[in-house]
Image (cartoon, rainbow, N blue to C red; front, side, top):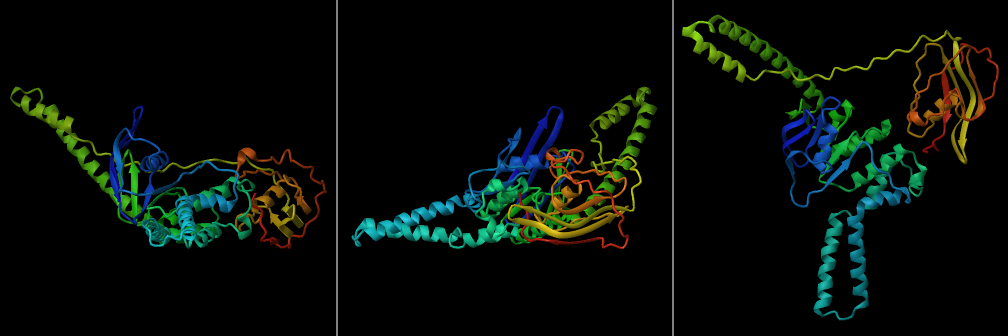
Length: 437
């Protein structure tokens, strides 16, 4: 059991936490929610010990282990995917080394009746039992299952981590965390770098996880499927609900409606009291009564309605010039990176006012196809933009994006062609040998 005991944190005039206290029981799966800036990530850092509160403490049992996945992690070079994932198993590997050393000594010694030999036998039994309890005989299978669940293929295991993008390397860090079998997992937006299939796999894994979980996520469905308890941070304090996210939303609305009614009743009481004060404060025989009413008002704790995160981002695109009916047409498109075929013989047509989604596993070529459309990548086949078409492009890593206005290669300038309106909307053959860099 982990205890969060009267945590207080203040930055300048803002109190981030005010006497925040709750407990996480063994095996409990808790969702930590609240508006942006409420302190969710900070609270995770306090629990794991990366940030110290101004007062209060975190209590944990003896030999209790916690694993923490922040939104951003330092990435390590110089190892393969498999070797980097194995670093999470340092205690198992150390126990294996001790077993190997004991077995070597037993093979070399012949004083079978000596105290030293019997001591080695006892140590062998001790470390064998410990190795078994730690999952030493099954960790290779678990490691393979976790890596494949997060989207890695067996062929990727021996590739250097530097060959992968930042999102894929974050998956390696997540694999290390899941492999270590901690008593409590602290997860800050664990689905940020995952595709749909990996999210579904992680969801199942966490549902079956025997340890406790405290998780921050904006994926409401993911929260709802995994958690059985919701803790909301509001105005520096918390509200604790023993229900998953969707039920919490309904209970939170009931709480706010009750607060509104209580606030309304309090305002009526305050107004009535102020009227009595004004009526009696100048009468000598009622002055003491008026003063008692004034003190009553001063001591009254005003009811506040909890903040509701209703902030919405608003933006507007400037009017675009009217384009031709066919916006983009691709014929026999293909893309290779060295020996790896991302896709080939792909045909697509996008018409004006159509909203098209490219879906598929990570690495299947979705972003590559978008970059080809923006003329930011060389490719095989022919791509034609329709009449008067202008492209706006927002990439996953916007700061590193090649702009369509200045492509890194010189695209062919085929003149727009007349395109049949009955052409198929999109058909493509995407290779399973996907790009992951």
